[in-house]
Image (cartoon, rainbow, N blue to C red; front, top):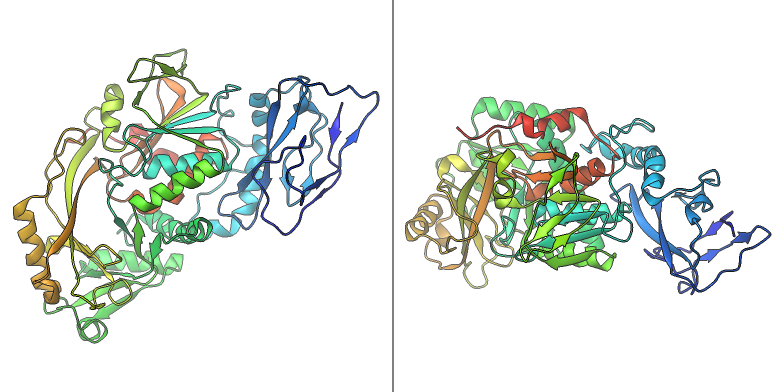
Length: 522
């Protein structure tokens, strides 16, 4: 039997992620199937599933929806199905014969790359990752093992959770595991909030990424139906003039809104602050606060709702030979197998790969404190006060969303992410109040209502590490967040999934994030 799809009629409803052709559970889909003669009777045999990708120009990822058609027939259905929906139009794929799923992905890589390029052309102007043109995929399709996860993602933080979701949305079968669970208190992303801003000195790539991530956060917020990003802006006080000039030039070229606000205007706009020591400040209105732990939980929930699998397990790399890794190993000694592997293990990444990353990641203890606002006083909330970025003052601060006014004193000591207690230091609590006396005297008499101790992983050059393992092409490593990964989460997911699926691979970024570009800390 040969199935053809000459037309596909869709309603205005959101399309389902999977459609059971045999049972027709989605009445608003109408699929016309024509059978060539002689027909082969369909018998009750083991169900085989095929995932079809559909482009969606309005979505934040190029290949968004995944539909599942089922045939109770062991014959190779890949040779007859018309593949790759593009706004309801089906491209003829009848010439494909005897295709395994792996070969199908390989043969269609150029089609997917072209679709990704077309659907993100406007986004590229705002800092999206450049896409390769059709037919120029720099590497073969990812490894696939039928019946098992296409990709096993180890680590449910900013790198891992967003990558797992993006991989799933682009058609991969994905399993996400974390040793302590997504959103746990040990991981770098386990705090309540993180800051998003675009001022990165000369590092223009992160200014571009921040603006793209900002838009993606808002899109995901609408999709998930829960608050994840708050547009309260960021003030950078008394930046060195040469650094400010570079950032202004980048902002002007990229169209990023900003103001340089003098002292008197700061006093007028935000009278609750003390500005005696501030001559001017760079203000970014398209910046603010993102939820950390809650956002990761939202990503995990949506990942599972779309068909992904999440588990709590301690997983380490397995033996590598012949340029690949056949399986990973769980702490109970059992093997866990997939076609490709992504290890995004946050502050543990150096311990997971000591043979190639020994000394590459420095861990820093970061203590954050939440100071309660006076009852009924909204002057320090995100609606009325921006975040403050002033590391030269010994701290940075973020407005009260629902947990208190956040102050993060700067103090660079190490941490063991597994065994160290996460109890705040009394002398750093004193530094919190020193900062409040300097900047927000109205909070000096208020109590610290909560605190967190985070483990930050810092690379030697403050750039991410996103690369394949040098001894196994199906093993990917992502880490080295260096204090600016969480805000980029949706963007990191897009970038990593594109590279793993051979949809895009910008040479400059590939070199920037390569293991070879990094080195052990001095």
